[in-house]
Amino acid sequence: MKIYLDSIGCRLNQAEIERMAQQFRAAGHEIVGETAHADLAIVNTCTVTSAAAADSRKVIRRAKNAGIDEIIATGCWVTMEPEKAAELSNKVVLNEQKETLVPDFLNLKPETFDLEPIERMPLPGYRARTRAFIKVQDGCDNECTFCITTLARGDGHSRPLNEILTDVKSALDGGAKEIVLTGVHLGSWGQNFRHAPDFRLPLSELIKSILEQTSAPRLRLSSLEPWDLEPDLFELWCDPRMMPHLHLPLQSGSDAVLRRMRRNTTRDEFRALVAAARDVMPDLAITTDIIAGFPGETEEEFAETLEFVQEIGFAGGHIFTYSPREGTPALRMKGQLDKQTRKARNATLREVFAEMESRYREKLIGKTMSVLWESSTQASDSGWAIQGLTGNYLRIRAIASEPRWNQIDQVKLLKVEGNVILGEIV
Image 1: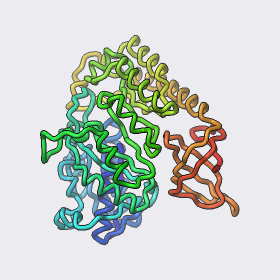
Image 2: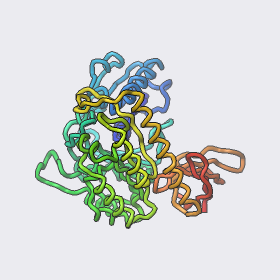
Image 3: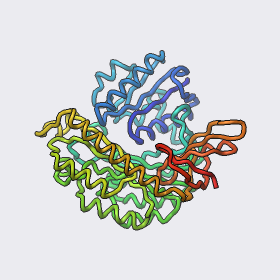
Image 4: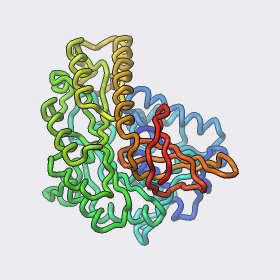
C-alpha cells in the first residue's frame, strides 16, 4: 500500500507523522510524497487558531479531490470537531487514539513495532527533512486562557526515557544529523509519568542522557515555556552539540495582559531568564510567540508589548492575531477587540519583528558557523545551489561543487539577502 502523510501546525504533529511513517514502513508499506500516488492519506490536523483549523480542512479536501480511496483524519481539530471531520474523511481518529492509529488500521498489536528497532527515515516529497522530530511529551497542565490545545491534547504526560533514547538512536541510524525534541509542554518532561506518578526528572536529565548515550551531532529543543527553565540549565549549552536557539513563547509584553492570559511569568522574570541565557551564549537566537489583540488589551498595554519585545531584541518570532476559540476562558472575557484592531496590531508587531530579525542577521555577517544542508538543487554543470540551517536557526544559501544534502559544513556568512544569508563553505 502507498501512503501519503500530511501535517498542519506544530512540530509535535510532525513528530507524530514521522512515527507513523516509521511503523508503516516496518509493516512493508511505502510512504509517498504526492497525493497522486497514494492509496491512503492520513492528515494530522491543528486547531490552535481558526486559520489552522481552516487549513486542516483544506488539506483533507485536497486529498479527497486527488481521488485517494481512503482518508484518515486525526489530530487536534479532529478531536475538537469530530462530526465535521467525519464529513470530510473516511475515518476519524481522536488524539487519545492516535498513538495506536497505525497498528489499529493494520490490525496488528502495538507491541509488533517494539520487537526490533525501526529506522526512522525522512519523509519523501516536500516534507523531506534532515532533522528528526522526536516526541518526548504530550498534553499540558497549564491553564492559559486563550489555549485550546490543552482541551484537544488533554493532561500532560511524559514518554519514558528509554523509549525516547530508542527513537533518537533509530533516527540517527536512519541518517538524521539533528534531533529536535518536541512536546506540547516540553519543559514539563519527567513530571507526569503515567506509570510512576511520584517519579520526577527534570528536562536537563533527558538532555544529558541523550548527549551521553547517543552520537547525535546536533540536538535542538522546540518551544519551552519560560517558567520551566532554571538558569543553570543553560550550562548544558557548553556542549557544542546543543544548538544555540531557544524558542520562548512570551505571548505579551504587558504584565497585566500576561495575568489575564494566566501566563506564569512576568516581564522581570523573562528579562532575567534571557540575560542568564545570553551570559552563556552571546550569539544565542531567542525567538518567541506574541498574540496581537488579546481581549481587553488597551493601547497602553499594546505599547508595553512593543517596547518590551524591542528591549529583548528577539531574533524572530511568530505573531498571531488573537483567535476566539470555543471552550476557552478568553472567549467570555470583556473587552473583545474588533478584527480590524487585532489585524492592525499584528501588522505593527510584524514590522517590529522584521527589523529585529534583520539586525540579528546583520551582526553575524563575517562569522563562520556550522550549517546542516536541507536541500541541494543542481544550478549548473559546475555547481549546486544548497540551503540549510545554522545552529541558531538562520537559513543559509550557498553554492557547492557537489550535492551536500544532509551534510554539515563550516560556512562563512557573507551577506544578507532577504530572509536568507549568502554563505561560502570554508
